[in-house]
Amino acid sequence: VRAKELDATLKQLLTLPDDTQSWLAEQDTDFPRTCSWGGFEEQMRHWWSNECPVFIAEELCHSEPVSQDGRQFDATMRVGFTLHRVEEPQETEDEELRSGLENKTHQANRTSQVKWPGEAKPGSLLLEWLGGYWKLPGEDTTS
Image (cartoon, rainbow, N blue to C red):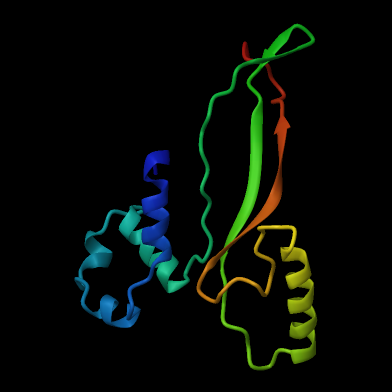
């Protein structure tokens, strides 16, 4: 997916039909035989049916060469994050634990715009930053 299409594509992937079972029942029964293997429609169905509940979004960017020891390298920046749909709390959750988390969240939110666990509304998306780093490949650009 091209960068300019990413928001629309993610919205399409992450917004299920109001009644997924009815939507699937209305679809062409020959879909498995006529779809493009690995195409967006197939991938969307995998996502919606939870056959593959994760996906990777990545962008290929070319950096300016980095010089080290007189050699040029095409460095790589890696950034990782997860995107979660916030689920309804389970009835079996310990109310005392939830209460303590809500108090901790309330205190943290006075100084931060980050949505802490337990704060985001069910059904919303929660972004969790994993980290990022630069690395140089083993071979320089002349290899």
